[in-house]
Image (tube, rainbow, N blue to C red; front, side):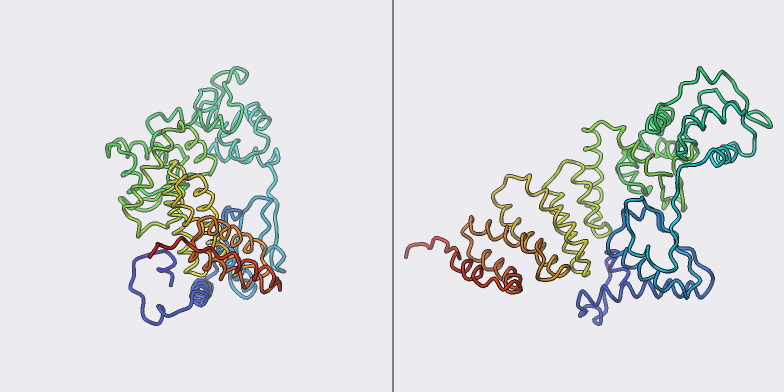
Length: 419
């Protein structure tokens, strides 16, 4: 079940092949919950969920289920997210929310002491950094490094000393400026960071090597520089090393430092490299890179496949998100043939929305209604009837029998060849 969720090429036993999608989804979530329960029985377990504001509906459902059982387990779940996200588990009796505000002066000073590795910093330097970073932890770190790299702070045997007056220091105006300046100082590694950022917050050595087109020596040197700078973490052993940007803002800075045309070209290379190993790659990842490459037709095709895969796993909410992305992109394409594909997408979207929201769903009604209008314009009887069959239960739930009769009266008849 887990291998199937990950899209791995396996031969499923007959007992799984006959499962209904809803039952498969339920059993898959049960498998994860059972694994967590088994680990908790062995020893206390920490489950860390970072950036929960980007969570997908299925993972959100799994975490909600784990929270419901956590009171009887040796389990601590720590979820970080932006304030605007409202997790469904927030109201659970055992849930505690801890707002993380900007660092206080004392906390910022403690952070600087840690960055100095136990060596004291001049008090005027501490005050200078605190006054300009507004309590943003990453900016505290970046400004400290900028002063060190610029020679304003010099590391001595037991302490840091001022190598030049603070008033003359060249200080980046914003965190983005600081990150960009730091990348520029890592000139040989900057290109590697850009390629990695285009792949994602996390990237593997194998894909990076295929995309970067650099000599093995230059690539290794660049990666070592990034790891040594603390901007990227590495785990695993060569050649299966996985690299992770320390912070999403660092990835954003590296990604945005590329000119638009080069950025699109890089995403195109990533997409084609991933397409060669499509069995190992989730279709939505391919869709993302094709869209970033400006190749809307390929992106829409892969978003459609991602929706099909999600629907097959009974992940209807994910499926609707992917099909809506495909529709958004297909609207940018001029081909008349795409109108039939557009109808098919709206049919699938309408069916998924009806499953999620019920037959009274206005969004499902709108999707089917739009598909009907396109089918009527194409005078395609088969497509019109297929779409009507999806819409009719929704109209029946509204008891709008007059509309059903009206739509049946409009069934288009394609031109028949003369005998």
